[in-house]
Image (tube, rainbow, N blue to C red; front, side, top):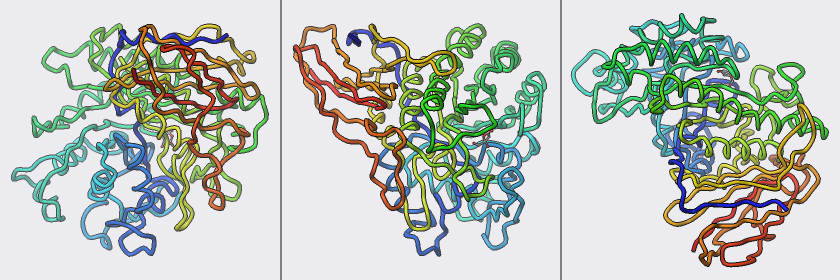
Length: 503
Ligand code: AHR
């Protein structure tokens, strides 16, 4: 019998709300159509931002939003995206479909979007094709309030007050689309560029994020940590606050990309196996970081993660528009439980991407909008944001499948906030219901105050614009109290379950 023992008296660290973050790039229909339709659109909007989408995002407590890329970031020249819209320079989005980018969504619009969503700002600078001066001026433009050329320019463009840039990325994927650099070269470039990412206001410090590894490139983490953290004089410590990690779930590798909706048992398990691999990746990158930074000063920011499937038939291959099934919900549940468990090092994570691209939480078509199964998992897991991780351990849980298909039957994480314990469990089995005993160590009389789930039907199920609520977060009933501190759950196959307990 599977058993989950929770020690309510042992907290292991705070789950940074930012690990429930999102990523939005100038790619396909993420920014344009998905988030921003312009003030003149017939689609209801507030200052150009889609009202339906913003309203839905507010309900999942988006903590942080990363922008403008991705690969786009290292080609983006921020001055093209400010000032009178009709005069803004047009460019070719070479990475994503070769379409014309009219720059109608720029810095001011991003800040307005974050204001409406109520989230922190994460701006990714251009190190690959931009100059130190350009990066430095962008930071001045956004964050300096006094008299200066960039501050004055911002004021001329209608924003008297500066904004708060919570996070600033110094380049993106500089081992690839951001300049094809070696880790040694990037690390030195990072030291130079970040010097001019000035902290203008001590009340509004900018957390600087260095470009980290692609998947399992442990040497990248090693070299960047060594050059940017260890080998810096004491007074420069703090010039790298975070390092990123990018990892996508591609069950068959880059080619062939598998369908987002049609999959057999093998591919289902391969996808979940790839999701579960996040645990190994985070553990191993963390071990390298621990060598240089045992005090865990530098956070790991997994600022691109999610499934990457074949695009929906008939859509532009450069737009990365894919559907989202209960399989995606499980990928989200598995990944978010892993981040919770690693909250001592993982301080931020951004799912790729927010709307209409890759593993989105929202899809749009004209004026229609739907929430994906992944959205509902983010809604369930929002209770973990800012909570304390509790010690918890599963026993009596086996694995399913072998090799590239092998996955644990169940995964979990448990947190506590203001006296309420939140337990999230995934049953990865495609076919079998799983019984789980939950045992709390304190001999108290606990009651279930909420229990919900996503899944438990055909794992191929997904929401369409004609049937947008086929997969939703619904009540989970199969939970009974066995004793004051003991509960029995019968968790349906292929489902993500949450229960919340109070003594
Ligand atoms: O999210 C899509 C792309 O994936 C991003 O632009 C890039 O950073 C990554 O390779």
